[in-house]
Image 1 (tube, rainbow, N blue to C red):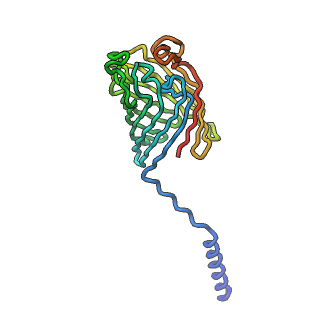
Image 2 (cartoon, rainbow, N blue to C red; image 1 turned 60 degrees about the vertical axis):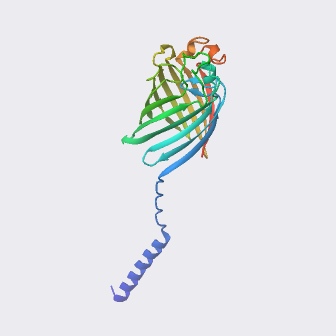
Image 3 (tube, helix red, strand yellow; image 1 turned 60 degrees about the horizontal axis):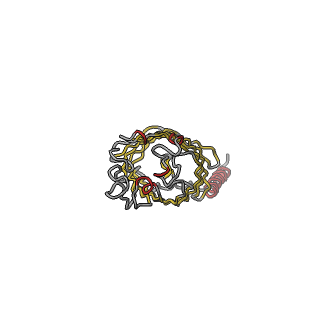
Length: 270
């Protein structure tokens, strides 16, 4: 090849490489993981059920919360809802609100396996449950409850264990009450998730209060922070309509609070 042709070839190669460099967009840098996130949520349900038992005498509830999550796995949160059961169940003349505080630590312990440990305070501000002068005084303690919990999630499956550190939801001498929860989150596609659940509540020194609850929840992510849910749920106490620990009409404003039901809900997270 002549010197002239060699120069022309080199020039052409340089030109092609320069054009390619100008027309190929540089790779976008990955966004750095934030140190922490804070989110808020507000929603409504047709019936607020806690472990299968209605907390609102089968009535609706407005609910909301705030959550802080650190990239280390540490999290904190608070959640609030209207309730009826404290006054209706054991004669407490105050408290129509539940205010929960919780915190914990979540981390991956193996491939596809996450451990979540923490504590929660179920609070009922102003409740005088078990105080002198209230109906059933001496038979009930303060409704406020503290629990520790641990949960292990493997892929779509979660097993959770909760244990009270004192009396459980106003039941006297019930320290050490436990709840075992098994569930699975099945992704159906198109933003839909189906979650079957079964749990068992054991109340120490009150065998009549022990029961098993179940639920099947369908959730739809509507986008922009909005989600809708529909849940069929019930308890093993549901067969004792009008009698038993949870279905005595006189204790729950004459309501059947442990029976099977359909609960609809909507929540907006931002």
